[in-house]
Image 1 (tube, rainbow, N blue to C red):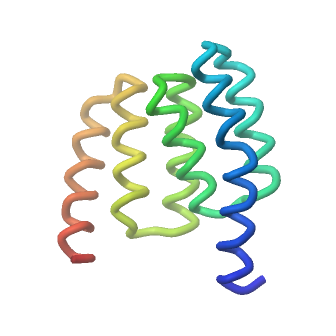
Image 2 (tube, rainbow, N blue to C red; image 1 turned 120 degrees about the vertical axis):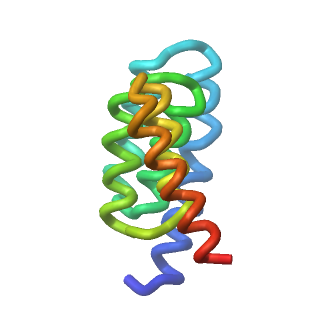
Length: 116
């Protein structure tokens, strides 16, 4: 698939899952939210998809170690992107690893300055 097809797949699958994931998170159904996000990642294995899934978990404070795993996978798939490292920082923070969060946010800021 080329980049346009990948971008379209990401947008379609994310848009299909996003409302259901947000409703599930709002209802406090963390296990169901993680299951939905795993299903989403089975359809779209891209860095953007992993970052989206990690951010949703970290933002809600759910399954923080899974959020770290998915953010790290996003960074492996697309290294050097500030927005992904920012998600990794937030996931580390939610997982209680303040040192890793601080290191990641410092790296994200450096990457952001380099991207500007």
